[in-house]
Length: 425
Image (cartoon, rainbow, N blue to C red; front, side):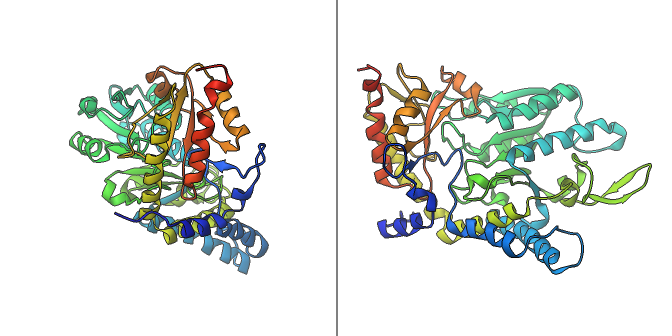
């Protein structure tokens, strides 16, 4: 097992994140426990973006001048950096503005393929009675697009259900049947932190001939990822969860599937030829990258991926596992607080949603903020999952590579005062 960070290593790591010195409303440095919502950015990422605009900025794949050539090189190098990080090929990486767009890209491409008619012979085309399967644990971004696709094509939506602790119940795998065309599920829940049983779900999907899309937003910054080992057909990624900037994400897809997907957004930069009557399109990935691209964000994301690689994702995972166990143990000692998810650190990450008896999550968040502890409150874009737990919303603490025991201690201490603050026991 990989070793946890030493105190000296963690101190050096935290020094790379300028925002961690920010003082909150209570007069202390903010204990940032909201990595599940968005990660903070190390200096190399901030500097990479600044340097790009200072010295390199140019349009990609246009012109022959120095700045354009350098920008194009950085833009395409980003594919290689992300591909290396996830064990893929660069020509399988499609840039999007976020993971939500990446999921929608696949769903809309399937819709477009279906609209071409059966004579087109596209393997992605759906027919009435076909099935799409998700799980009850999905973020709305991996649920609503499939609902819309089913409404447009006549396919039916079904889902894998959950155990009491929010883990996926593999006894419900039989909803994946011979009529299932797509299985889309999260690698790690953004509410429970539970790691999905990827091998079992993928194996069942393969038996039934279904395609598999994996949402890695809550896993790819917290554990090693090898997309080939996971055995899926598509995967989506979000830069801002991975120490990178907002405004850029990516779709990874098997090359033969990307080639079968019709374009979704059309316009400049993705065409081969245009006449007044018709157009032809470039091969993937360019056919899915219409218009101006987030070049500076890709440069920043590349810096973030190099930064994570230098730390070592196995070490990040072990550091966070230790702190997850520490946080769960601390919460278990507070009366009136219920964790929405597994109570153990095994097969889960440090995303810990919780409900406080008699106190609204927004009030919980405000009390914690007064102690300079930053957490997330709300339904976390997962209303069906909260309904499963019998609540409308929750508070959520989530850890990252820079989290310390002292920050967890401050969180536990502040959480322990919430109910008494509002007159509870």
